[in-house]
Image 1: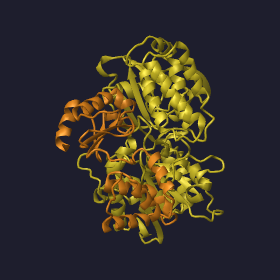
Image 2: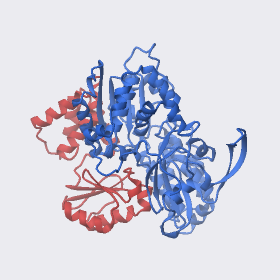
Image 3: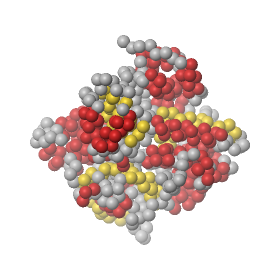
Image 4: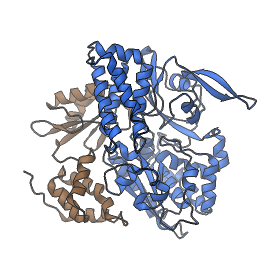
Length: 445
Length: 165
């Protein structure tokens, strides 16, 4: 393997003899960072997180320190809540599953430190309903932490009280959207709220300031406090700091989950060196680089991007698909997104209309139904892609499909509108010829 | 016609304990209570909706609209052994559709099963295509009741049917 993994969060995942109980976690240095954090000033911890440059790992890549900084402790008079978003459901993503099922205390410790830093007394861990075992594991982990005085009343005799409860979702993808998640946690349908005014930092859970962070993000907080924000920022690249959990699935020899410094390797290295290349000696056709909402990248594509040169100046360079570094900024520059870190690889035998029909069925099922363009549009995109896949469409339908997608993005309350139309726009544009050929030829799936 | 379920003291105790997790608003306990009800009685009947609503000082519609919104809640019984097969892209590339068809045939289940369980005539098995179960690297995957299984070939599926059957 050409590039070595840098395992911070996955350090103990799958290592022989490592178990999920608190004794094993403590034996391996667990909860020492909490002991350190709880002696620090809360502003100091927030400042370390800001210095670290950590960007949220759920999909949007928003700077965590900035998110925390929205709540001004000198002005705020309401209780502050923290919610861990463990509703991992972006197709192609399976990193949080590993942490929850194999190293739960790392998540709990990350949550406790983050809660302490933001003066949170009550926090919820919203775990997707399809992880019943994960929910039990986390409940047990919380109970173990309570017994060791790491959670609950008067934590480590510092006078700090915190309660964390595990809350199970029930199969709705939209609960991964933070305001939808908050509605769901309030016991309602998960209809996302409109921003402004409902920014979680201002009017979140029970209309109080609320921080919603992804599982991986909260685990990173431990490592930032442990090594210091400045040292953490040395990992990865400027504005793309730390490590990233990457999940690779689809037509590769060794699908799986890996942890690398952000941008330390290219998409080509990930697929060919780390994952052993395309299965069965086939050739690459397409890659979805950051969960199924990310725009598809086509084999053979070249991209013009601005790149920093050795002398510090910016220059226009042209790079191939395989040369794209796995970081937030370059992935955005080539017109897609690093998103949730879920990379789905498709080989030359795959039908693009078939793949898109699959993705469109997902979004049609998961639209919450609140905004008309998304509710109607996602359903029509599913119907038209399915018709194209089955060869029961006309060539014009390909244009109709693109038109439907173009009229959803930007016209909805939440980012689901973009999430469901980006795949359609990119697949149809980049594989237009294939869609038009399949549409009218009566080809069976 | 829905039958009346008998509510045990232990069940009420569990419910009351769960409500304490939500000191700010009891309504937040709606989803957890629906999970508890469904685990206990197999599906959320009208009686369940009304019982939960009264427990949380809500109107029955506030609870019923959750049953119809969240895919994991059902208002009819599923099979004793429930298969939930992942339908989404990575699993589909790995053979999720073939697995779904194989299980359906093997357990003699008619019906579509896309998002909503299709039940075998004897009520023993039900199967449902669900969306991404977040284990895309080890597809095809499925859940049997609350247990998760990965890399499920047709042979492995046969073994699992025997084991649970």
